[in-house]
Amino acid sequence: MRQQYKKYINQVYSNHVFCYNKTSYLDNNFLDTNLFYYGYGRNALFFALKNANVNKGDFVLLPSFICRDLLSAINSIGAKPVYYDVDESLSPLQNLNTMPKCKAIIAVNYFGFPQNLIPFKEYCLINESILIEDNAHGFLSKDINGNLLGTRADLGIFSFRKTIFIDYGSGLFIKNINNVNIDKYTIKPVKKINFSFYSKLIIKKIFPLIKIRGVRILTKILRLVRKFRTGHDFPQSELNAETVLPEEIAPPTQLKQNIEKVDINYESKRRRNLYNWLNDKIIDFGGIPVFKDLPEKCVPYGFPFYTPDALIEEIESKLSLIGLESFSWPELPDQIYKCAPKYYHSLRCVRFLW
Image (cartoon, rainbow, N blue to C red):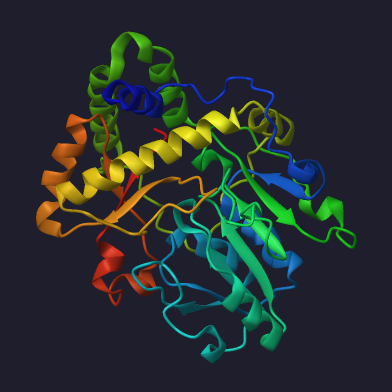
């Protein structure tokens, strides 16, 4: 059993995900007919808001527990964010029907776990709003009824690069495309070199020779170089990340081909097995899992947990002994950061893909 999980952990760092397996994720051909490709999830969200007829001065309801970068899509339009809070299970804390009327509302499938959309759809019926399902973490994941996350609402956002090892790649799912102006959602991509991605790609290719210890050494060197260049060990969002959208950079043809290469059955099994194995370990280490169980058909992005500040270094040390590490998530919006509840700041996640 120990050797089995060592294999799964090794594949966090290897380039195993592209195995050219013919198992297809093209349920109902939605990737061919209903999906439009972009570089970042923020770009996809921008066009989702446009599709929802969100204009300057309109209100958009979204969770306060969110990455600050996402706001760039809202602010680029000139719309105004309105926040609802989430509890420690990452479900809405307030009754959504008590929230102000907004043109669109965003529901997030945190870490690939299906958000209950019933209260969101009730809000939409009452307020004539458009529901956007943020599924950046949930590619490969389904709800208990077998519905693909990201396709359960009027509009859905995917960030494929969060699940498979590609430099750029996101998608906008539009349920009803009959009245969509296709040209409006098709952008000529800009070429851009992602140095961090290609550094990792080289390390992944030589992983069979250097193993996890070698990855750790090279990663430390890369982080030291980044700290020398930027002052930070880890990538930080830009100062204007809440207001400026990045350039569009995803080649749609290449992106779709990469998605089709994924061994879905194996990758789903690997992630679920790692999650179940880590559950007891994280508890033993002193962490508190965000979710009480792993729903059937859910394919987790990673393992999210809460931890007291005093235990972070100890937990990281114990994770390192089994070849893993965790990171803090998310980088909260400036407006939320100082007034956020404590558990917003204490969530960490073990990634299942390096």
